[in-house]
Image (cartoon, rainbow, N blue to C red; front, side, top):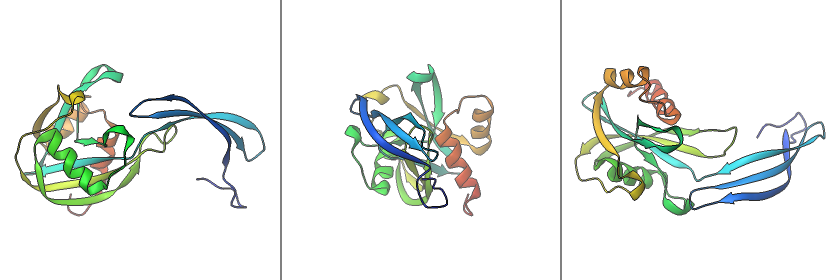
Length: 186
């Protein structure tokens, strides 16, 4: 949280109300006070943190593709997700679960690359990034919302082509790739 020189938060919550809630998120409207004493409102989307897994094999990556309703098209991304019902989970355990559910792959090795925030202007949600290697194939066990999902392996050049073609538009996938490129093992 940004603070002024005295240590006070730059924006302080003085009231809050829930305006919408479902099994995946809570939307609240906060009444806030700024450093100069002026008041305003701030809309916040509460969602649990999630994990994103970069499955690496043979110099390339395993990706998943599915229809993304809010943008009205199919896109590719690294496997990612959270537990139903806004429940929290151990990030490494969740990473193994999401990888297996979405791709059928099991990771012999899982390395944590870091924790990032997404949409930090509207949500406190963050995500842990893992690299999965020493992969073993298996059957996916997808949730009903993922029934149209497909899984495919791409070379690094193929991955970059998907970005250039606008077939990867997921900011979390791109941010995770940046962490991988900065990592010594990437």
